[in-house]
Image: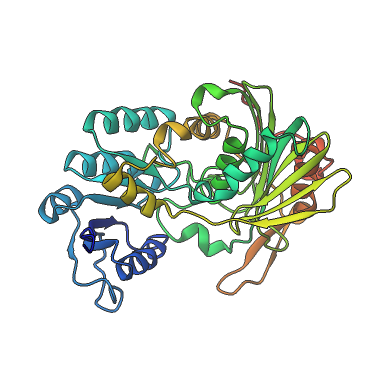
Length: 390
């Protein structure tokens, strides 16, 4: 007897522009596979027929709750400005939908706690959109660590050198802001564009809950004319005694794939998390390169809703990351770097971009030595931008 194939899961998408376009492409893929059906789009700017090609004729509205209820959506994807995340996720859950919520889950720890409490009360599931945590490499690396492949772990570091032109910081009213009209936004390099580096390092250590963080040191700088940080470093001490550092910039000389390193006393593991690529280097062995598969977080949420599969990134596994967000939120304003001595402008495809002098090497050195910028001899970082400890 031929098994009955489940009907496609009805989905609404809140926030269809910007990063929402990535979700539209993913929805096209999963629609073609018969897994989901886009039944609604919630955005202040309606999508055209061309933008919805391959996705049928979903209803469009600016009211997520009303749209979710009317369409009977089982899942809502929330890909909206950071400061709207908690309200919209809880609205969708209150109207019966499980939620895929983009990272960062909230702009403050208080909003994160409200999210966790509200989702639990709703009885709905919530998946946080850290796509790197869907990589099977995360479990693979943790197995290598547990098996002693690199010996005792001395620390974990992450590095992100990205290039962003000046128009990136004006793409939306909230871009590059710490607050907007008195509301927390916290759109910094560590908390939004390179948030995956922070979250992935924490997960590799098994330190993803809020209570897993003992202390946080921060150095926040900015070359661009923004409120938030675009060049920063953080050093964490976890409850299990691991030192974790992340150095990241949006003002790189050359853009590069971000990576995480597990430093052991007998070797190391390097993980390029956007590529699912792992390099194992250890004493008395040749280097071993491995490429892993990845589970899409929306597919995992559908499987969780249908079949009870384990959710890969529930909100409580982002508590440690949210402690970093809170430290950034409450830290002194990022230190502005002086033009000329610290940064210069180069031409870009659409607008100019600011490049911090020597930053590519500084980010790499931080990852190698588990150091902050002020400890590496950068003239522009001679005075730390402010330290926060838990």
